[in-house]
Structures are given as C-alpha cells and as structure tokens.
Length: 299
Image 1 (tube, one colour):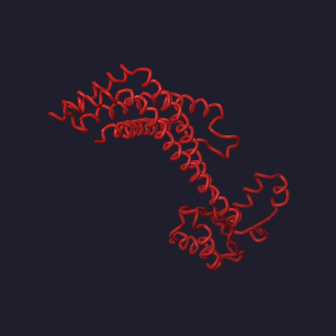
Image 2 (cartoon, helix red, strand yellow; image 1 turned 90 degrees about the horizontal axis):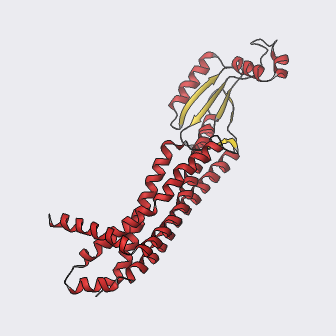
Image 3 (cartoon, one colour; image 1 turned 180 degrees about the horizontal axis):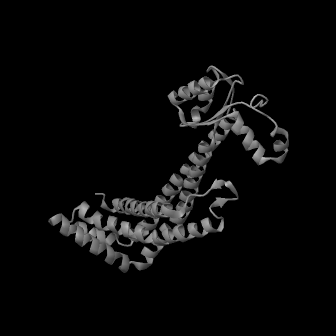
C-alpha cells in the first residue's frame, strides 16, 4: 500500500511539476516532438522498404522446363520430387498447350503463327513455375533442380536475383540503422533538454535530500515527469503519422511511382506505427529524466 501511495503522490507531483515549469516543459516536449517526427518518417520508410522487399521476393520464380519427350508419368514424378524439396513453397504446372494458348491470347502475332500448331508440332515445353521459401537459397535450389531427370532447363534470373536480394537486404539494414540512430539522437537531445529543467530545480532536490528522502523517492517523480513529457511529445507525431500517411497513400493510390513499389496498407499499419512512437517517446523521456537527475543524487 505504501508503494501505491508513493506512486500516486509521484504522479500527482509530476503533473504539477510539468505545469509549474511550463516553459521548460514545453521546450522538452517540442524537442521530443521534432525528433519523433523524424523517427516516424524513418519508421514509415523502413517498414515500406521491408514490405516492398517481401513483395518482390514473393514474385521471384524459378521456371523449370521439361524435356520435349517427357511423358505424363515423368511430369507426375517431377511434381512429387518438387513437393519433397525443403525450400519449395509453391508449384504451378503449365502444359505446353496452355503456354501456347496464353501466348496466343496476349499477342496477335503469336496467334497468327501458333493457331495451326497441334500437339506434335508444338515446340514449346511443359513447365513448372516454382516459388521458394527462402530467396537467399534460390540459387542452390535451382542448381539442385538442374540435376533432376527429364529437366531440360532451369531459369530464375541467375546473377541478377542475387544482386537484387543483396541490395534489398542492404537497404533494409540502412533503414533500421537510421531509425536506431535517430532514437539515440532523440535520447541525447532529451537528456540535455531535461537537464535544463532539473538544473533549475536542483535546490528542490537538495532540500528533499536534507529531509531524508531516498534517492528512489526523489527519482520517481522525475522519471514519471519524463514519461509525461514523452507522451505529450508523441501526440503531434502520431497525428502527422496517421493523417499524413493516409493522405500520402491515397495521393499515390497505394503505389510509389510504379505498381512494382506497393505501399503498406494504412490499416493496421498506422496503429502499429503510432504505438511504436508512443513507446519510444515514453521510454526516451524516462531515460532522459533518469540520466539527468542522477547527477544531483550523487553523494
């Protein structure tokens, strides 16, 4: 009960302190707001890069061409073999007749050439379109498939795919690094801003120590005050994130420049982003206050 009473009193004192030192509190909130806006932009960018990477990876496909003289039994055997492979997620079979029909439907020039082909004249091959679970192992999977019986050719964009995957991984790492760096900078700025607030109250801290208050009981109101400042500082970034991203998404119809770059759907993404921003604001506010007040609690 004593702990709850102390906590309740600390929360009340923290709110009073924010109001009493309004100008310094406003400076801390402004600092948090500005840095969290930048963090929010970095979060939106990093999540969209990650989404774009996943969408591209989902479209990466291995195309396996069967030998021309492959029988129905050979095709069924190959399908069973493919299903047993560890890294294969999805298999789509297309007979050479289906391939011919698709090509005829898409292009008139093919239609005029292929319309008279019968099953014996058709030089196209039966194919399997294969999607893998782990794109980083797509080269190894393709190499394994080339050694299978009745396989004429295996293609997946060798060389280009590996470069593409590596580029995506590098962009993801850079995006996450930017978010982490911005959070660290935010903590540093908040610590220095809150130090001004606490410096103006060092006499108050000294009096509390003289009357026998423990370091814990002195520190708690300041930590809670940092939480409050972080919470208030996250309000504007949340509003800008929510409505700004909605407007951005609608303006570009869900795509950035091209339909290859699909943006994350606003819901529930904006809610997750808002929660992350609030958590960052509260945590850095607590860390900033705790670090700033520690100096005046040293014996």
